[in-house]
Amino acid sequence: MNIHLSLLTAAETVSDIETAITTAEPTLNDAVHDLAEKPEETLSAIGEFFKGLGSSMLSALPTIILAIIVLIIGTILTKLVLSLLSKGLKKTKLELTVTKFTVQMVKIVLYTLLATVVLSILGIPATSIITVIGTAGVAVGLALQNSLSNVAGGFLLMITKPFKIGDYIITNGVEGTVSRISILHTQLNSTTNQAIFVPNGLAINATIINNNGNDIRRIDLACSISYDDDFEKARKIILELLEKHELILQDKELFVRMKEHGDSAIIIAVKAWCKTDDFWTVTFDLKEQIRAAFIENDISIPYNQLDVHIVGENKKP
Image (cartoon, rainbow, N blue to C red; front, side, top):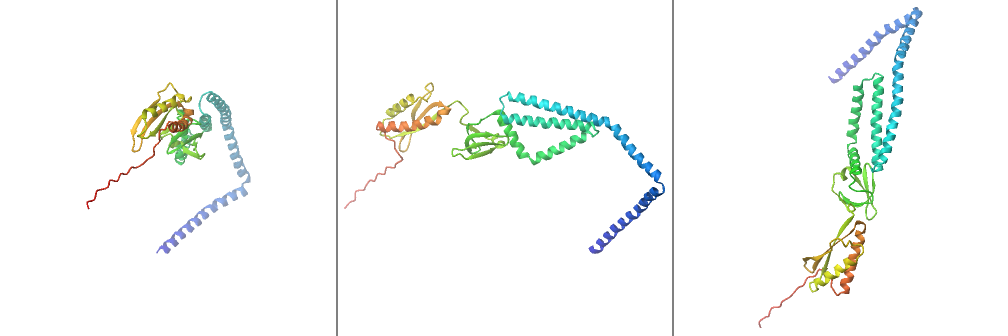
């Protein structure tokens, strides 16, 4: 049954083609016959066609010239505006990447407007042009939505400046020193010099801990001494070390107090302030100096230990 239907369909298609050829043959024969029998009239008709075409082109010539003039003037004005914008942005405190990105975006907008005006002068409806541009914009936006999110994030990072190049930050579960901020991602260098790339779309929406965000930082240390040692003596030794260290800010509070009674030691909390750039230097200095001072003054630094007492039972004979 299916084969029969297919054959019928094929036969109908062939019949339609034959009908079209049969219909076209008289028309072609008539044209050839007219050209052979009436060459003057045929040539006259062809001449009239090209004459009308020439007249149409002449009538459209002023419009074409106007479109070309608008295109030239618009191009010159666009370049002038972009040059002034670029010079103005360079005088601001914006990052170089933000400046270039802004200039490129303005350039695209201005040339799009110029093309729309020129095509409108040539008679193309503005609604059609806007429809085409809008459709293309939607298609590009859908295809590059993740990248556009990163671009927007990079733009916001460069404007709000939660961190800058050289800052040590912690974000999205990674940490390192910021080495580069681009439109799409931020590059961090870890302490082992591994390059970490964080998408700007994630960075702008995540919690950012900037260790270099303020000029000064507080150092928090915990020291332990034995229960048999004199706490006041240990406290006095630590305070003297804090007061003698030249990188510690003496106008800020020096804090040395008993923090807790640990399982195997007394824990002493030590807090002091220094410049952010000196944070790690002061931290390591204090750890080394406190240990050396404790050893020198016979203050023991205990380790975790467990005392086991065995009590024997007297056995009756």
